[in-house]
Amino acid sequence: MGVGCTTVMHRRIALFSLLLGGYALDSAASPNFFHDPLGLTSGLSSLVPGSRATSLDKRAGKFDTMSNGSTVLWVIQDTYEGQTFFDSFGFYTDSDPTNGLVTFVDQQTAFNQGLAYVTSDNKVIMQGDNTTWLPSGVNRSSVRIFSNAEYNSGLFVLDLDMAPWGCGVWPAFWTVGSGEWPWNGEIDIIEGVHDNEHNQVTWHTAPGCNLTATSNFTGTIVQTNGVDNLQCNAFIDYNAGCGVTEWSRASYGPYFDSQGGGVFAMKWDADGIAVWSFYRAAIPQDIVQGEPNPSNWGQPVASLSPMGCNVTQYFANHSIIFDITFCGDWAGNSYATSGCPGTCPDRLMDPANFVNATWIINSLKVYKQATLSAGATNGAGHSGVALEMTGWILCIATVLHLVIMAS
Ligand SMILES: *[C@@H]1O[C@H](CO)[C@@H](O)[C@H](O)[C@H]1NC(C)=O
Ligand SMILES: *[C@@H]1O[C@H](CO)[C@@H](O)[C@H](O)[C@H]1NC(C)=O
Ligand SMILES: *[C@@H]1O[C@H](CO)[C@@H](O)[C@H](O)[C@H]1NC(C)=O
Ligand SMILES: *[C@@H]1O[C@H](CO)[C@@H](O)[C@H](O)[C@H]1NC(C)=O
Ligand SMILES: *[C@@H]1O[C@H](CO)[C@@H](O)[C@H](O)[C@H]1NC(C)=O
Ligand SMILES: *[C@@H]1O[C@H](CO)[C@@H](O)[C@H](O)[C@H]1NC(C)=O
Ligand SMILES: *[C@@H]1O[C@H](CO)[C@@H](O)[C@H](O)[C@H]1NC(C)=O
Ligand SMILES: *[C@@H]1O[C@H](CO)[C@@H](O)[C@H](O)[C@H]1NC(C)=O
Image 1 (cartoon, helix red, strand yellow):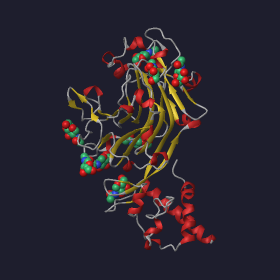
Image 2: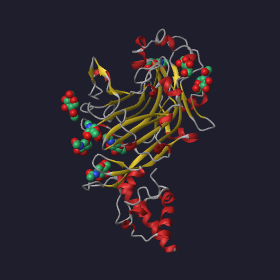
Image 3: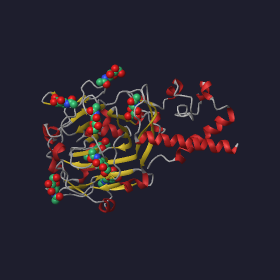
Image 4: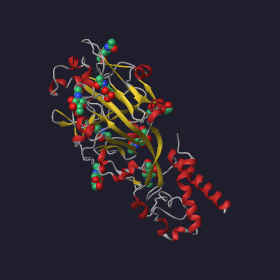
């Protein structure tokens, strides 16, 4: 699902009419020419021969700047939303590797039992069974889905009204590499248990990938016995991984939901892997407008810097996963100290305990990076993205040619 020439043409064609109607093409002589209030020129001046991205463009706020000085634009790659959402996901039906007291059902069962559906106003719902009384020792039905598409970088933006929570409930929105776990890495973007209020972001990897404690992020590093878990190595500390707890009370559970949910964004590129979260009232306009620019968002809540982890080596071929499990390694083992009543297995029996074990998703959008200018020194640039940009330039040149022929 690449960016088609038609998409580019839609966004740019008005500009070329403007260009040809209003001014000579050697526009580099007049920087003001590119100061268009409609924002049509975003990304363009650096594509027109003889011009370059100006400070005006940067103030327009659509360009992201990489640590190596490159200017990049995030362009849409895949959109998962509405009635077609489940077409792009498989339903996982094996037992829960984290030992949850759960039965992950197949797609047909999920649809038939109302555990996965899309509402008439295009909200995507996934939930644990909240209607069936269970005898002691019987697992509760729920869903776990994985994207058919696999990714090796990108900006993943999830807009949701509600994330699951409640005593004994353990949901996650995460990505994981294909092949034998954990060799291609795991990125947990939303994860929590019970009625916690602070989301936890965690990386689980092969040995040798470490969190850099001095990286610029607002969250708190998760500790074991008073020591920061800096090693993401899944083979130590009972697979605690390297985690960061968000500062905001509105990042998980009842407060997140009572704010109307919000947006979680995970950026994975040559600068590492970072996560931001925004409750609804705080969602940046560039996200709302579908032109996300992480350099406008302030510090992330969590970040895995390339200083301690070669992300190309430790993360590959990631599928996107949503799940809701119950009890198990985290929610079960922490239950006694959670303030929740009784025991986790007992809690499982009454369906009324699971009325908030629900994902309500507006959209999941995956953007990819398009490099507009390669920074001070020119990198090799023979990447897929660079090739695609060549495609854009050819495409724009074609439009230009057609417009000239027609006039
Ligand atoms: C119930 O969940 C447990 C823990 O994940 C699993 O070992 C067991 O096989 C499950 N029971 C059934 C009948 O699926
Ligand atoms: C943190 O941010 C400061 C200021 O932007 C920067 O100089 C420093 O290199 C950053 N540190 C890390 C570890 O990225
Ligand atoms: C990660 O941390 C371990 C343990 O401190 C250390 O042996 C290893 O060299 C570190 N690796 C990197 C890439 O920083
Ligand atoms: C990171 O890993 C990739 C793939 O294994 C390798 O090609 C690259 O040289 C590594 N980068 C650094 C800085 O070690
Ligand atoms: C990722 O998937 C591609 C295509 O299936 C495969 O060729 C490649 O070896 C995989 N990479 C890793 C690191 O597993
Ligand atoms: C579900 O959420 C509502 C609204 O926050 C709350 O009043 C109720 O106690 C929750 N129920 C459970 C079982 O968590
Ligand atoms: C189960 O959850 C769904 C979705 O949140 C909700 O519409 C329904 O009312 C719940 N059922 C019960 C019995 O609470
Ligand atoms: C900076 O990184 C981007 C993205 O990885 C790459 O396309 C670009 O060529 C790099 N620029 C330099 C100057 O190395």
